[in-house]
Image (cartoon, rainbow, N blue to C red; front, side, top):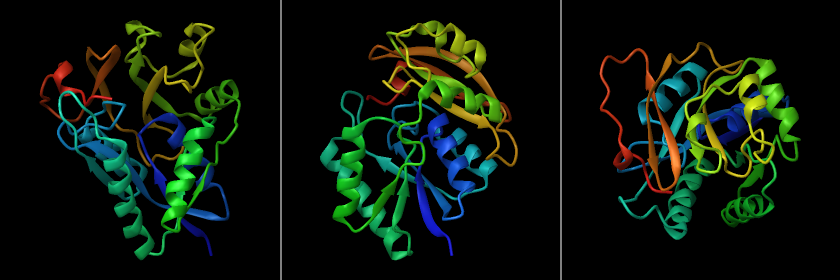
Length: 240
């Protein structure tokens, strides 16, 4: 019998690749995707992707989506203490359903892994990291070779505005400056994946405006199937 797993989900390439690896593993079965969304802004935390696009993505993958809403305001993100309490409550709900394992797409951040493991152990859960220590250049090329398709949804200032909204593909990897990690592992960029081997069908996505908030460039990704969208400006992006 496979071990049920809830997968920490941002909509980006690393968690999509973690889902791919877990789907090929005889020991585990992903039963839900767990995402944090800004309660005020209705966008994925850190990535700035619209909630409606996240829902379409989960539907295209064919897994239940559990959205955890985080409080924030225009000047302050959710505090760590509040975040930990909200997530602990969410994890206890999974324990009551017989789910005791959480999957993450983390690659190298030892302190983040230790923090996740400590918090989960406190309530009797454990973490698994199917991509841990993968060389990021190899992983980026594998993602592309497998047919994952996505856009850069958020780009740090050190990478520059010209990369926001670009496709995550071989041309992008060739254009990245030498000091930029090919998977954005140092926070240089975040992605939104709209197609790939874990999808039943693609999410029809189009690019909207690019805006700047707190030194980051955000590409507004839109559902191509929705006729109308509220225009995005910097005040529509949750603080980080």
